[in-house]
Image (cartoon, rainbow, N blue to C red; front, side, top):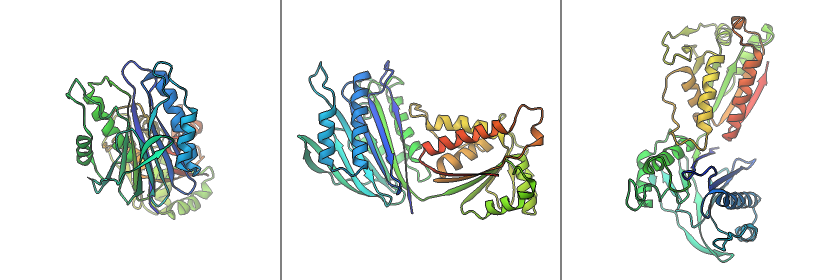
Length: 386
């Protein structure tokens, strides 16, 4: 079954420490998800409180399948009233999806969401509804493989007002830009970063409003199996490699000793590249039947640097991995391509690390950080220690 992936980028209004936009996401055990992008009235602390309450309440209730009208009534009765304006106000986009890509989108005063299918905009049928005195637009959603839904706060359409553009970026231009930037290989998080980065540039790197882009993609699943380090008991080498090779999906071997173990058990050899594409990352190797063979601790260290940047929701840089070094290739496989990751972690002592200040704890700490990052990306992670 296809899987849902999602990611967002939020840019704070210039000179504000807190963002007035808030994204809340709750995955369901069955593979679906409920997502809310809320935009609080004004900016700064007040807007942050309004959007946080709105997104949290809406997402929690909608994920529990509470009727939409009841969700809206609860939000309206929960928001604190702004003393200056005398209103409690937060716009929102609510998307709830089952594992088969079906669901609904409810929008209140946010710019209309964009559905891309095959890289082209597909208009959504937006039915006007009145809930709790508020006018909402509700759309039925039936996602197909490769579809991308882009939701945004009004900071996106305001981008460039009075600076690079006279009247901002209208929704038609935003749709056309999204169509141009679309690539089936891009992750939801990367697509969100591309759109947010364009806004950042239009604002001249000083956003005039809180700006958020949330992307949701319905995509084919991919399992990546990764072996890190040799087993603690060398007598288990054969059994571990056999189990590792029996897994469906792509295979990665991380570590020099691990590579030698796998090559020996497969009755082949490791061919090592001598190209130092990145001075901080040792060259990759090649083993027949293995999709990526790379060095261990140093490559993992650089991977985590890439991963921290990739998962940052406040970094406006476009999140792509085009490098051919081991860490970039590994980042693309694990952070972008994979929907499920199986880790085979060996506890064996690597004699090559003696005197280098690298021990098993260093490796295992890196593995734990990697697992937490993968889980934060809503990827299914299984780990086995040997």
